[in-house]
Length: 357
Ligand SMILES: [Zn+2]
Figure 1 (cartoon, rainbow, N blue to C red):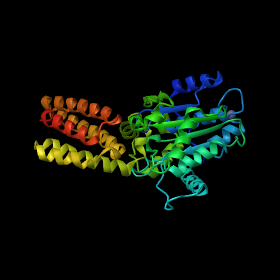
Figure 2: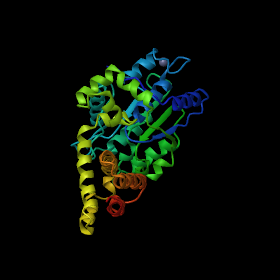
Figure 3: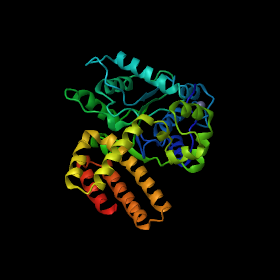
Figure 4: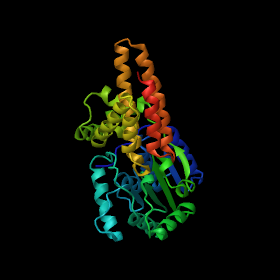
C-alpha cells in the first residue's frame, strides 16, 4: 500500500516548492505545530518533491515519486521514536532492521499511525545510523532526505557525545546533497543546540474542508476502522479538531483522559494537599510528552463540563468552564517550554480550584 495522500497545508507546500525551485530551501528544517496535524506526512511529501526527477515537482509518476510514495526510495530515510533495542549496544544493521519493520508496519496502514508510547525514543544507535548514512553518496537521486519525526525524543546519552556532536555538525552544515527535516509537536522539549540549527516552520491544524477530504479517503477509512475510531463523520471531525493523528491514538488517549480526570478531581476537591499530591504525581521534565497529552485531555473534559452547564442554563458554571479553558491553554503553552510539569500543574490546579465552582 502506498502512503495516503497529503491533504491540506497548501500554503506551506507552495512556499516549500518555490524555495526548492529557487534552490533556497534550508538544509535543516523543523516542522513544528500541534500533535497529529500531519507534520511527518508533510515531511514525506517534501522528501518526495526533493527526490522527484521531473520539472513539476512532485510529479507523482516518476520513479523517484513512486519509490517515495512506497517508502522504498533508497535516499529517503524516515526515523521516529522506537522502543530501546534489547542489545545495549546495537549494531547499525540491528537499527536498520528495526526501522524497516517499523516502517512496514506504518505503511500497512497507508502511513497512518498512533502516537508512539511515551518511553519510545530516538536513541544513540539511531543517531549513529543517521550520521553514517548522511556521510554516503545518494544511491539513486542527487540528494538524500532524512526525516526525524518527534525529534524532541532524541535522548542525549552519556558516553555518546561523539555521535551527538556529529549529528549537530550535520544539522549545522548539511552537505548540498542532504536535507534534514525534523518534526516536533513539543519544540520546547528539543535540545536548544538542535532547535537553533534548524529553520522553523509552523504547521497549523487542517482546515475543515481538508479534514473532510482526508476522512473521505478509502485508505483513511480502512485505517480508522482498524484503530477503533468513532464511526460517524461528525464524531471524527470533532475528535480530530484539525489534527487527524488524534483519531489513531486510542490507547494513549485513554490514559491521558484518566490522568486528566485525576487532576480535575484534585482541583475540585478544594483541598490543598490533594492538589499538591496530584501535581507531584505528574512527574518531572522527563514526562513532558505525556503531560501535554494530559492537558489536552483536560480541555476535552472541561468542554464536556461547559456543554452540560449550558444544557442546564447554568451561566456561572459555563463561565467558569470557559475561564478554565484559558487557564489550561496557558499551562499548555508553558509545558511547550522548559518549565517543570509539576510546577505548572501545581499552579494550574490552584487556579482551577478558584475558577471551577
Ligand atoms: Zn516525480
